[in-house]
Every structure is written in structure tokens, then in C-alpha cells.
Image (tube, rainbow, N blue to C red; front, side, top):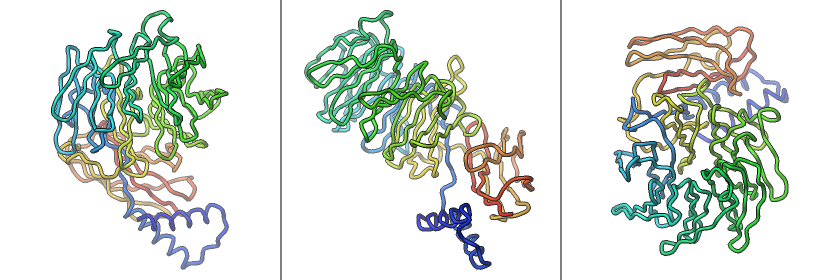
Length: 436
């Protein structure tokens, strides 16, 4: 599949740069490679799990972890901890409100959960630890020495080595009101970075503390391969700190669409992924910004609260809509097509089938065929390769049956387009090639 895609991209690049005058044979080869790329490429980019189509007990997902055997652990608001192992779902009730705020996995694959207290699960038994600060938990980070670093809502940084506790009073601990969302990250030098929602960024190298900033409202911290710190902030957007200077990425000066960032994660390719308070999921590769939201994906909420990556480079997205329990849930996304998803088919919504358009490539019109298994409100849209909407073909409720739509594009240029069929809980996409 990779060889097909590689050759295909070479042909596309040559067309776009006008560096190659296609003979009839070359055109035939290009079409053949295009079709091969369509056949062998993964086309499903999104899957949504919620209370209506899966065993998810609530649509408010607050925290995530993926353990060393690729089990998905989901912390919910008021409905405890949920585990998916690829075949079965297990739910754990830990304490009174069952509000799971943080999850981490140590080097021995033990699970550490922040709720009313700190909980450890070794796969068979649970152990409960009461925090010495007496405050609730915001975040748990585990370093290479298996030491747990915990941020609580009172502004403390707490170190736990499985035996003893050390409680540090951060700068945020002295700032009213006495409620802080404390975020933590560990850089490549082992330095602990602490951010506060009440204003402040600090560093601790194991011996000395340094206050870096006292203004920023930090909600999340991630460290890239160059040791830059990326901060998700409220009011200041996405912020990069390189140990000397701050760079601000806001809607006014960049492709970042939100001033309010709930979460920041960095994938193994050093792409920056941020979850906005009102604008969905955004990817930044250092040059290009791409936003995924309720208007161009299966997401039912643009309020992204947590993110995680699995071994197959799928990104797991936890979302919710404040004050509306109907929207949110758990989404899985991969811009190259979801791969090696371990959930059994019974958890997936069997609502629709979008077939590959034919002919493809095409130069005048193309047939779009889709199958509906149950009454569904659906949309069929065309997007360009950058994600800009070109045209809405269908926006209606459909009864079970087979449907066909003939698309005659007008006033568009040759190139690759995305055909998307979307319901409230599922999206399928296909690539189309238009040749004038």
C-alpha cells in the first residue's frame, strides 16, 4: 500500500508543478495508480462512541490512558472508570461521586487513578491512598524512575514513591482563590514543569524551584522532541516556551482557532494537537494548521477535554458539552485512516455504507452510492484536500434502503476531493479525483 501511495504522490506533485507533460500512456498510468490508491487506502477517519451506540455510560469523558497492552481506560464525570480491552467493557466505581479526573500507567503496567483519593490497580487488586494535602487530584505524571508526580486542586505538587510522600507548596498555592487546575510535564532533562490555571508556570529540577511566569492561566503542558514546552492556556491560546522566550499562537496571529485550550498532546512525529474549549481539535505540524470540529467530522461537541494516542497512531478524543449530557462522548480519529482498532464490531454503529464513487477519476460526472440500514438524518458533503467545504449534496432524513446521487461539479479545478457521509454518530469518507 505504501508503494502505491508513494508513486501516486509523485504523479500528483508532477501535475501540480507542471514539470511533466503527460503522454496518453502516462495519463493511463496516473489513473491506474489513483484507483490503486483508492482501493488500498484506509478510508474511515472517524468513529464515535457515545451512550446511544456503545457501552459508554456517559457522554462526558474527562480523562484517558492507554496501557502497555493497548487497553483503553476512560475516566468519566459521575460514572466512574471504564475499560475497553478490545472485546469487553468493564466499569469500576471507585468512590462517591465517581468523578475520575486523572489516569496514568506506570512502567509495570499498574494503573493509577485520581478520583476522591489516589487509587492503584495492578490488574487484580485495588489499593487506595489518601493524599496528605487532603485536596482533589488534577493530574498524575509518572517519571522514568516510576515516581508519581501529582497536581492537586489546592495548588500543590506532590511526589509519591510508593512509600513516602513529599508535598511542595507551589507559587499557585499562595494565590486566591484556593482552587487551581495544576498541570504537570517532565522534559528530556528530567525537569518538572508545573502550570496553574490561576496564573503561573514553574520549574523544579529536583533541587531548586524557579518561577518562569506569574500571569498565564495554564491548563495543559506538553514537551516536544526539541524540549520546547507547549502550553494550553485560557485567554492566551497555544503558547510555546523554549526556555528563554514565549511565542503565542492565537486566532489573531495564527491558524489556532481558540484562545481557550483545554489540553495539548504531541505525537511521535512532533505534531502538536490541541483541544479547544469551543473549537474542537487542532493539529499544528510547525507550518500548517488543521482544525477538526463538529462541522467537518463526526464530533458532536467542540469542547475537547482529553487526548491520547494508541500504538497505531489513532488519536482518542474525549469530549463533552457543558450543561448538555446528550453531546460529547469518545471519538477515534486518524487522518490516514483508522487502523488496528481493537474494539469488536458490536460496539460500532452499523448505520450506513458509503461506496467508492464511480467512475473515479472522473471528468464530468460521477455516481455516489450509499446504503442506509436504519432511519438516519445524514449529510453528504464535498471537501477539498485542505478541508474547505465545496458543496452539500444531501442533508435529509433517509429511510433504510440504497441511494444513488449523480454529482456534476461546476467551477472547480482538477484535483483530489473528499466525499463525506455523516450522521450524528459516524462518518465515512472517500477520496475522489476530478480531471478536467
